[in-house]
Image (tube, rainbow, N blue to C red):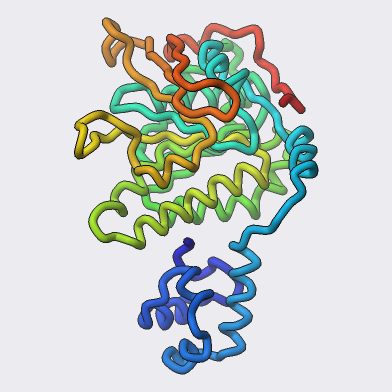
Amino acid sequence: MGVLRPGLCPGLTQDMVQLLRSRGIKTVVDLVSADLEEVAQKCGLSYKALVALRRVLLAQFSAFPFNGADLYEELKTSTAILSTGIASLDKLLDAGLYTGEVTEIVGGPGSGKTQVCLCVAAHVAHGLQQNVLYIDSNGGLTASRILQLLQARTPDEGEQAGALQRIQVVRAFDIFQMLDVLQDLRGAVSQQVSSSSGTLKVVVVDSVTAVVAPLLGGQQREGLALMMQLARELKTLARDLSVALVVTNHMTRDRDSGQLKPALGRSWSFVPSTRLLLDTSQGAGASGSWRVACLTKSPRLPTGFQEMVDIGTWGTPVQSSTLQGDHM
């Protein structure tokens, strides 16, 4: 259920959005299910323009049937597996990050979510020679942190500079900025694909909680609608551009049981294909580099598996550092 906003589709202007909102029409569902003749009279808008707008929205947001065999063939030819650069993490992910899917890393403060994202970005940019888009929404990314990882991997300053150039960083501190970045990416991806420095293969969003959590709670229905619009953008982007999408999420405490659980609720839990839970290792504490990674959701492996992950030693090269294409 997308929220109506200027630029969502051709013909949807700021003035039109304001008029529709004044009559209680705030989402795509509200508009396509409304009596357009009545809306046209109350808002003073052209009936033909509203009909055309509804057709565009239905074409853009409706699901169309596909043949299962065709989907499977497309999946086999378009899916690549990207190593994270951390062998124990790759084991939990069944060899690495899969393009076309959303992988979520969940953990509390100090669990190492951002560090894992930085390791992934550095490895894909340096080891796999592919481009990375890093969307930072909590201010946790600095160039010096990535440079430290690259310096631990290679002393060659030219290689370090080349890897840094393949990592594009965008700041997005609210959900509207985040949606704009994702939509702008569609227009720019053709240029990035043809770039001599490699193709875009990984998009990191660190974190979704920072932009979504302030919108949720109470009777904020628009907040839930915006969250699901973001979810749809992420999943569609991963599939259409054949990129591996990595997002981070925080932990929250259940009101009834008091137990910790991933934030953003049940609706968001259906967004990632794979979910990893990071926790500090017993005895190591948050200051140590060892973490326990637990697989809590996967389309390929049984859940519940755990691996000890040393997030501080990405600088030690792993033997399997190449992009694996056409693996299923």
